[in-house]
Length: 246
Image (cartoon, rainbow, N blue to C red):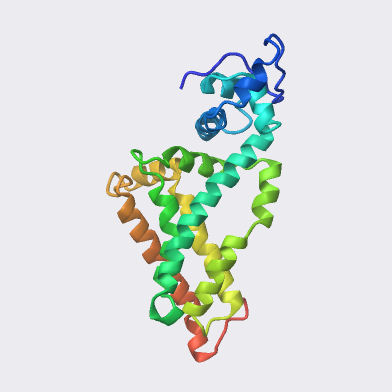
């Protein structure tokens, strides 16, 4: 991607040189907010937060600097707003699938159904021809290398995980909360192995045997692996014998 040579690392949104009233009119434009979002997502996803300046974002968006300040206040706030929006959309898709899984068996979902609701959406978002590909790249990079502000958000916002923990408790009624929580933690990390870099590594050491372009098959394998793992980790509850490490 060609990038603007005019860098502004501090995220300032000064509007010097613009005619009076022009900033407000452009910032209030009906599509300005979306243009900022699309440009920022593309740049942050490809290069990361630190490597992207506000000037580059507005250059790609075709707007002036004042528009970012008007809508977001700073590069950091834009970054966090973008992350929150995409995570809301991702978790909304997960919630729809989770509700479908919970509607089966009189509210006692299968382990596989619960895990598919969590694991499949972020993998399927990777589809190059889909409208979520840029969002997928952005989220993967943001989570892999979070800013201090995003790290604080990630460490505290676990409400969506609570829904899945409770669903797994209903799916595995004999398992302890500790077992369920550890199992969900390990299962959730599977999606971190589905980034561009990790999949290129997989293609390399499998010598092409693994088709990293077949996203549906990838999701199926990840769900099967997680289901077997959680079932095995929680199987000791059937005899009420629990390892001391739990």
